[in-house]
Length: 214
Length: 214
Image 1 (cartoon, rainbow over the protein chains, first blue to last red):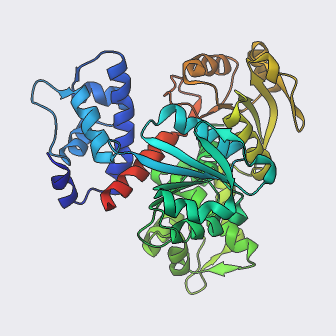
Image 2: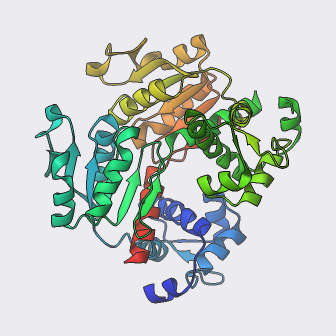
């Protein structure tokens, strides 16, 4: 299958949400030297039903062969390419408090095709700190930097009350994606893709299941 | 409705996942002094369809009145109590690197009924650092502390290769819930509730939507 055929078809959000998880498990199998896997074994590992797995992967033309199963390497690479992980993305981090620092290390240690090109913070004391090849700069430079460097993604880890203004700044400067760690739901133009990480939603779901068992 | 009636009914995971989001928006409305809202207005705000909203909230006996809409305060409190957010939870943080520190501030600033009672790290240099009322302790004390203090939740922010051993330690010591920030899917007894925050899945979904638009 080609990227073209994927795009002709509308893939549901639910399937897209599951793909990174498939890829994560396939990566684990790769590390363990496992070359092929049946939908049944994949099902036991991931926790989706085998029929769900076959259905999901059929969306992309299906990579399994009857009686052989899926090739781990091939499937890992294909899902990566469907997700766009065979490309490089330029990232800026806006807000270099604890969470911004944690995300900077996470990205630079785990996500080789997401490259941190700049870090921004309003606090003078944090500016000029260096992180790998990037330097912490004042937010006054943010718009110009995003435009000039053609930055793809802004990671927003500022306090809630600053979130929308940062979002406005980067979107006017031509950002393509926003990874939002604040509690605010951002108002952005339609051509800017937003992914929200609502930490609180996850903690509250945990509370529900605990409370439900008590 | 009573807590009892909720428990008699099986509520789907998908609905539970949506409840924290309802509560978050209702909290915003509260702050703005808004007392009632129709399912239609709630729909515009949250982005689910009005019929989805009515269906979701009907799971809990329904709190809306025909022609009046939902009472914001009542609904906020009820959802909180369904989620178990009217209770207090004792939390330990295991792994006090950048992410652990970020989560400690997040919880203590935003989640008043989740109380951090202890913080653990293997690194000598980090021990004895204080965070509000909690002190950073050596991991050798972890099991004893969880048992003695009757801790409810362990936040795991250690490196991936240490995640399972920490999970084993706290679950043997009687932990009830684990909030897992590592990339590892933990193997835990059935009576321990786990909520995974897979940061990478969110970043990869973002990449997909960006790549899809390029």
